[in-house]
Length: 520
Image (cartoon, rainbow, N blue to C red; front, side, top):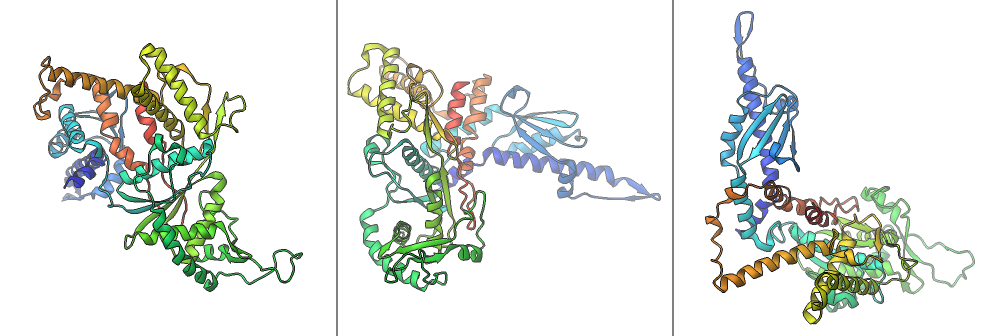
């Protein structure tokens, strides 16, 4: 029951737009019908009724959600024909049953300005947030199926690009989880040295169980390689090799791609995918070992149907990761969509040559020192002790997350390593976290004053008069940020297709909205 409620939040504004389209189309259709009922041909009265579908096509409705100057209308409807006089009354009457009813409509030439009932919208929006809590915007877990995320945490000292990959993996897992996927990891996500700062993934893989499973899967996949119809005949790769040298065991990816109708070029599979070497001499290739690991992880899920496999890798590893994808399809007859979230590198601005030498740990240490400096400037000598250290570390991790995630994954991240005291005052992770901390402090102080008897306790929400919220900034906060947030989360994950590796996952959108609002 609760999950059904969460799902309804994701479409409150989209549902309103659909209701508007249908109601306006119906009103126009009725108007056209009334006009044409009295058409006379040869002295006889005829009736010609246009279907709603035809009316929509002729009317060419275009509904735009406004983001500024909301006092002029929350939605503007453009209609390429004369707007019926009674359309406003029709919409007002129909919207009484809607979650977000209409307060007023104003027509002008070919436009219709729609104003929502703000009191009802505040009641609905705030009630949704209070009831859902942290689950606001989240779909029912498992509703979309199982998602398997393939990650590669760095073993040693991670560079900045590997740090970005780690944060993208964690972010992708949470986005998939919020969109109703039961998320499982294949491989370790978090770089060991950074575990204390960034924590673990929602569901990591059981490495010991995977290792046990791999032993049995390797034998089966070995047999699959030998029996594959795409296995290439043994042909010397190098004319200088001696006759007793074992020739590489390889499969034809090109033939498989053609047979399966997989898309190539552009955002799809590389056109250069041709021969996949599975075994060189007595040694199985890394791609083969990764296929074993992936297949073992999938088998550990028992009877759960995997809906999608998401490979997260840097642009330098994109070709290799596609080889793994194709090899797994060939050996295990995998029909599940496999998509690849490819990310660009991380470079440094004003870094004085530090880009190549700076590690992930170096960046964390640098941002922590800069954050402490900013806090000392703002709060003075009180910034000391374990509590402040924890606060500063959380703030520093927020800065790094925003730096890595607020840029589209296929675009390079450019860091300013010399950024210092202005961290709190600028937009970004520290700015968002600072404003969150201010609000939390206000709430905490209010609760303390209530307990001390200085203020009465807050009333139940049902007793709150939301008509007192009359400022445009208050309405903008609800209409532009709170109500659309579930739709924003939903739009971060698009559809996945079995014949294309392009991952329709937009990791940067979530970071843009809060910083943009606080900046304004």
